[in-house]
Image (cartoon, rainbow, N blue to C red; front, side, top):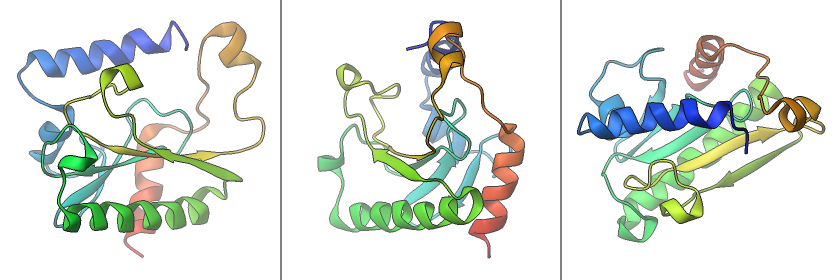
Length: 160
């Protein structure tokens, strides 16, 4: 894992945890826009851009209910999450034409969850060669698009 990028991410997460809130619950309390990065709100779940993406278009589907694991969610919430994951795949294919995807959830901090108290599902578009020598030798990720541009593109496609 990159040593330059990770401390920034962890500082962001830890600062939110210290304020007594969850980054996902805090985002739900704000108006949607570049500040909270929520691209879509459903009845039981929402879609939000990852503030520290692995690639452009890195989305997360998050239940509105604050639960640490998917087995704590009811069937209706799980169903809506999977529908939103599927729609996210379609939108990302349309907007970015990736060659593949990583889709999954890290449940628990030992599994790599940055926010272990609120389960969430990652949808990461992938391209051949998207991890290159810069990540390996420089320990830096290069994202070809600003987060605000990604947010605008995703929201525009989501609303079509």
